Image 1: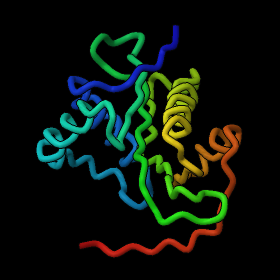
Image 2: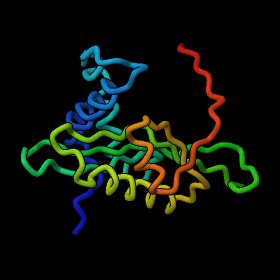
Image 3: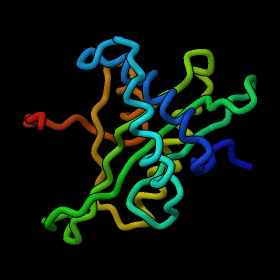
Amino acid sequence: MSLVRRALPEDAVEVLRLRQVMLDALPIAGPDGSTDWHTAALPTLRARLAEEDGDFAAFVVDHPDRPGALAALVAGALEYRIGKAGNPHGRVGYVFSVATDPDARRRGYARACMEELLAWFRARGAGHVLLNASPQAEPLYASLGFTRDPDPSMRLRL
């Protein structure tokens, strides 16, 4: 039996906690520790976690030492883009949250969650999967077959 399961609406508070762990570790966001946004995000996240056939999925591992807590989280969404060679149907998976509780790291939880999310993307016909990798996480993603792309990304905050 797999340790990984699909996140449920009742996991939403823990999903946000682990997302905060990830955000605090990013140099772009920085560890400001503010969780004020969690209150506004919670209802939407609960609703999205309740959608079994939607374009969003999160996979988690329950914390082995803390009942009710999560040890790891991987979340992603399936997007449509106009097709192209190699992906004529235009389905693209995007991984945007990968986090492991600091006291549960180095146990393979993130890998197991990623494998479930990748299977979910494959089952829905994704032609490829995108993610942003920190230097610390790059070996995990490379071992799963991800390669570095030149990044022409730009951002506009609205």
